[in-house]
View 1 (cartoon, one colour):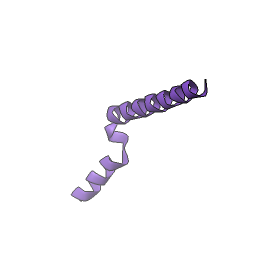
View 2 (cartoon, rainbow, N blue to C red):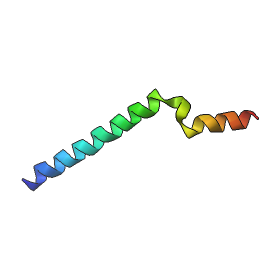
View 3 (cartoon, helix red, strand yellow):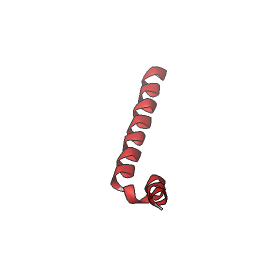
View 4 (tube, helix red, strand yellow):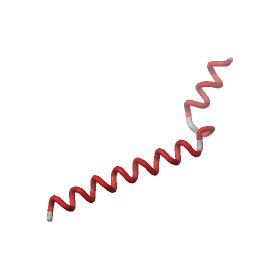
Length: 42
């Protein structure tokens, strides 16, 4: 039983990371790196 619960936790973590990745890709303009590029141009 403990093993299956651990697997579920890992799956949940991986799913969460994938969702975060999607959000980062969807909003590139709000990421700090975008501002860094602007600063480099100046």
